[in-house]
Amino acid sequence: MSPITNYYPNDDEINKLLYEAVIVFDASALLELYHYTSKTQKSIIDDIFAHLKNRLWLPHQVMAEYLKNRENVAAKPTQSYIGLIQTFPVIKKVEI
Image (cartoon, rainbow, N blue to C red; front, side, top):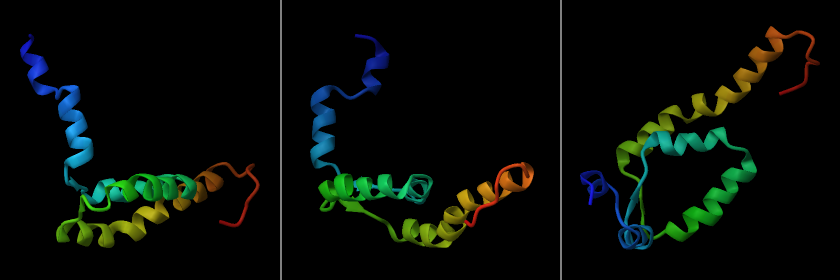
């Protein structure tokens, strides 16, 4: 056995983690949801988070960082589109 394999869990360990581990998110993982479509966000929340509901833990600091940064992160895609439209004036302007 290679020493490298010691760093990777085997299938039994992975299954145990998937079904028993407490999941702790950091703020950046939660803020990453803003980069997905609303359909994908809903799917993640409804299909994945629902199965983890008794094992999710959000530390106070994570929630504070999420709340502090969410407006800027949520606005970022819109700002990118506005910048793109301003850079390429041949693109028909649309209300965002």
